[in-house]
Image (cartoon, rainbow, N blue to C red; front, side, top):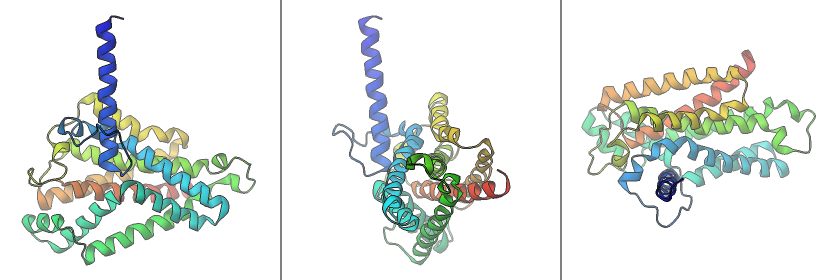
Length: 282
């Protein structure tokens, strides 16, 4: 390999790392290298790594669950897991969901909806929406450990005992972050581009290769689940489609907050679908 080829390869790896860390910086509160900023060049390419960032959030959430379930109850462990996820992302997606609830609940025109969505204050619809999301997530997660057969005769390996729970969490976080990538790729951004916080994500669609990579990251955790759980993709995809149509009808496309709402709804629907499939299909 020539010296020029080696330099090009190193440059390509550095660029990909920069794009990846940009995605981490955008979606989480985790520390990244100091040279990473909100460069539009990297930010517009970062959605291909959104599902991979979901792996990180899932890993920290699972770690919190395993630590607390070892020394306390599963209920406390689930709460610890949810808190870990919230702290990791800074409630980024939940904030978007609350803004969508307020905007579409209180606005009846495109202009009014967008105006409410930009308001940093939370209203009644947003408060109710957040309560519903967090409560639903707790009770859905509460069911998951009960479907871990090894808890009847557990081994000393806690990761093995909770392997189904872990696989579901990783699949949920990666898949739910893949759905906004689909929306970005095939829908239209409508917020004023001069003030919209997601502007760089919308100025250019992902290349075919980058979009396929995002799909691979989003679906890869399913290899740890039985093939029947692929049926969970149907309700998640359908709800994403319907939400996108709803946003299209009222405001002509999507905003950054809409993407956050889609992530939250997709995660909840996936947990629900997994429970139904386990009970009636597997």
